[in-house]
Image (cartoon, rainbow, N blue to C red):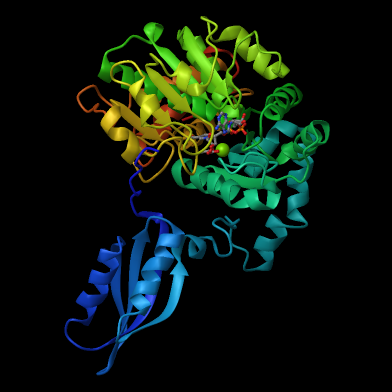
Length: 477
Ligand SMILES: NC(=O)C1=CN([C@@H]2O[C@H](COP(=O)(O)OP(=O)(O)OC[C@H]3O[C@@H](n4cnc5c(N)ncnc54)[C@H](O)[C@@H]3O)[C@@H](O)[C@H]2O)C=CC1
Ligand SMILES: CC(=O)C(=O)O
Ligand SMILES: [Mg+2]
């Protein structure tokens, strides 16, 4: 067994302790030493109140896991003169009551306002839309609102946890649309896994939305759902886990290859997890000119001689694995230049990295826990990236979908095409100038304020060139 070091403390596992501490010199130092000795990272320390005998303090601690946080709390409890009043999990606190809300844009404080916003005035607006349905874009929230729709079957890397359990992620996507792009996102978690019924449900609620973001729907069902909704609706339908992920992974790869000085056409890419994201990343790389892609599922390398492939995987095998490589993941890692993980936790180890070609590029993108932790991989790779917010090089579809939806809504595009996705990938990659490019900075930060607008502009230009924009890029600014 390889020696896997402990992982770094992170805000996702942070707790705030409210402590009654005996008001004597040296007591705070004792508390902080105990926390430090146990491996906790202290963030804020606040005084809540104090008297001669007791100082009440809130101490925020980042831990490696919630079990690790519990161990720290136990240790703090054992200090003489310290009483733990309360322990709050900050991530759960942030979710109390949900992360988003619907707000009114106009005041409603008198009868005049009410008779315009609501009945009777609103009736004239309804009639205008009945006469000219296009006016829904101008007179309702449709023009700036995206439905974030899931069935809860592939939530992050957690699998099929159902529609209710998917709500925090869908609220999170809606929050990102709002915060990063000024777009309204509305979480819709549908209790239906039959493809016909799901497609029908989404199509029937579509009128209020300017675009549909499909999220965390498992493969292969997601492929048919997206295709059928695209055909049925005249607004953009975009499966984020497929295409958002592909756009950002390709952007990161374009920049990583500059660092290791390898041409796209010459590399061997191993992709593990041939689901929604893995399939879409493969197709985009293929489109960009990568010839040697080997997909790996739970049974090993995907190739045409296998007789256990479903139609989606058979189609996959037809366009990948040109050398007919067979065997387990560890076998096909031999000579790979790039590893892309879109599967689950801890799928590869150091031995696999050692089999790769010079200057390996590793994108371990499973969430929340990647295929290999960065701390483990760093000594053996040239570029390391994950989907997580707490490490450098975050390859996450959040770099794509807010700008993409801003772009398609602004120009009233009717679809999202391959050309628009490739334009978005280049826009993200080009956000980092060649002077700033380093192995820890192959992809811009999700907080880089240029990214959303650059993606939106690139998407609008491409939509206009392809003739699927209702408004030209200049007038839709
Ligand atoms: N960083 C990012 O932006 C994104 C990351 N992801 C992550 O990628 C993973 C897959 O997501 P989706 O494609 O949406 O789910 P999916 O359910 O459509 O596909 C996952 C596939 O991975 C396969 N898989 C799981 N463990 C495996 C293993 N040990 N070996 C080989 N194959 C394995 C499953 O059988 C399935 O085919 C999740 O962990 C998700 O969090 C997905 C989208 C975006
Ligand atoms: C980031 C994302 O969409 C996922 O992990 O499913
Ligand atoms: Mg997702």
